Length: 400
Image (cartoon, rainbow, N blue to C red; front, side, top):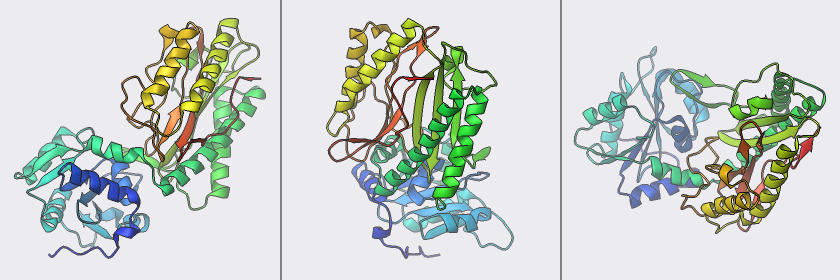
């Protein structure tokens, strides 16, 4: 079988495909094989939600993307992907496939591309040892290199469509946050406020964004049809960071951490606030005042050209000046996009520079077990000259 030329032009692909191919050329990578759900979506625009067989994106340095998926997923793949070249594997009814399994089909594709003996990029931070051995067995003459960091670098800068979807995710999360705050004011339990927040987020999504999907990325053992998540932790439970909400009702003098992760067409937003139930004990109130002052001092640095580590060091400086140096967190934010927690962190070691199109979380905090947890986080877009807070739910010191 001759390789079928893609009917779409390079202009129909988002800029990230060109960036990724340029990175491949710079690093001498002839083809990338992506198994990670976020990465196959990044290249093809397809999220099958539920995985029983791998969904594989193949990107050669000089060709448009190829999507390889099980025959059962053909209709969904053709409806949901932006690529024209879709190949099938497996056995399902009378469907014509490239091979009975993904290994045979992938071999055929790479041979047609003429890269089966060349440099093949794989995601060593994701694929299993078994998968790596399978690839080495079917392409014995190829050189395999890890492209995990290469892809992450490309993901740091978001395309216009990704930014638009992140804005939608942030709007949805704001609805949930305002609903949860109102629920606490009404005396609700952790579970009460989360159920109402997720209900309102879903209603807002259903009414205003008919063409937006809120599914998240799954695994071979399950999928996530709805990624509009909200959870609340009160009292001593705030130090758990993430746990399922309970029927616990917050008590006077306690704080409640309200945390929302949302997704729109693959792009995430993070929105976190801490609410005081009545006046707080003085040590906790002082910590809140300190972190709000520090946020105000660091905020002007969030703009193009600033080193990520400078944001961290400014935070550390503020904590030390107020007597909280021993409680300096390991990081004060991270990249966000296809993952709610992308790998790049705003910490003392980061060599990254803020650039237009990056989206980060801004979350300096003070965590003193038994005393206080100041959980405040926003999703922030770096613009051409400044920054834009995508999450806009009420902030500052919230006492009800």
